[in-house]
Length: 103
Image 1 (cartoon, helix red, strand yellow):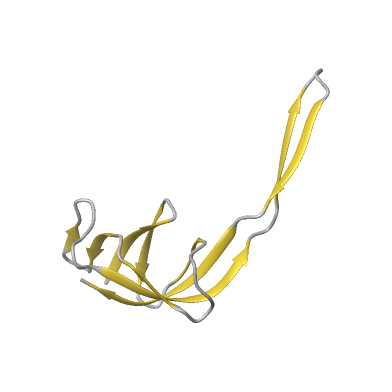
Image 2: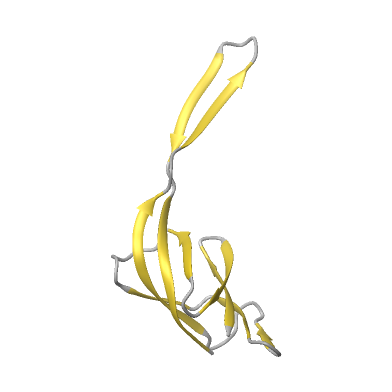
């Protein structure tokens, strides 16, 4: 069985036992999280679509790790204008392990 969930402005297709990296969610490592924004449920032959979400469906997950990605360098440059701006950004993330899909 699989589910399509929406979190952090993105959509993810997950199954039980999957490890997925999503935008930062609140909670410490080892905490349980319930994701109830389920857009679709499916197994091999049939699927359930939501309008926009599937009623009564939820995905339970466990937080594995909270962290930050590698630094991305943002460099803005305009020729002949002496405009050079260098900036850095590190995006926060949460690693989840999907434990149960119900619906």
